[in-house]
Image (cartoon, rainbow, N blue to C red):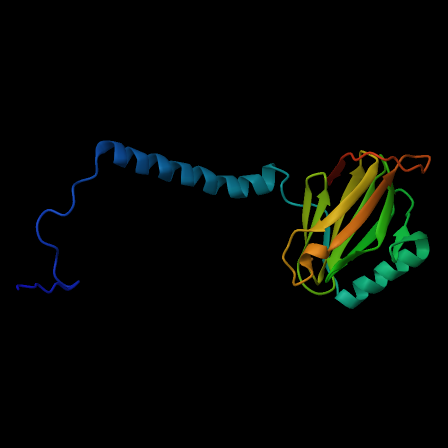
Amino acid sequence: MHTETHTGLDSPRGIWWKPAHRSEKMWVAIAFGWCMVLFAMMPLWHFKGGQNPSGIRRKVAPAAYYARTQEFIRQYQVGEDNGFPVVAPPPGADIYLTAMAFQWTPVLKLQIGKEYTLHLSSLDVNHGFSLLPVNVNFQVVPGYDYGLRVTPNAAGDFRIICNEFCGIGHHTMVGKVIVVDSTGAEVAQNGGARVGSH
Ligand code: CUA
């Protein structure tokens, strides 16, 4: 039996390729053009799209951030929910939310239509702030304090879900935001919230 050995050093025999068809070349050209459009969109979106948080951002030691959160809780605590302090800060206040494996503290009680500066940071690893059922998402990073201007635009009971895998208890990491109307009464339906730098 005749066997042939072939190594990668020899060029293949015969016609093993055909020149690209015109439509294939056109497809490559279109795909490349589209790549360039998407590439240009990245810097464009940064400056024009309002997609990047323009809130306050500063470095902070996790322990110092946690101490600030504790102080905030002492100042405005109005109750307790499942062992977590419920905090009702006045409109316009700087409010502090701490993420840690595997909880969010405190429970925030906010007024509809009022602006707050929401500070987010983590004590350990990256967590993801995801406000349900509205589509609000934000990275919570240890060592950084992010201040976002938020104005709740619907009353109700909202859940903060961690959307960044942070360990064995990731799926249990659920926090709470309660939005009440100006009289302080809780409304039973879920609504929306607006987050932005306006
Ligand atoms: Cu915190 Cu996942």
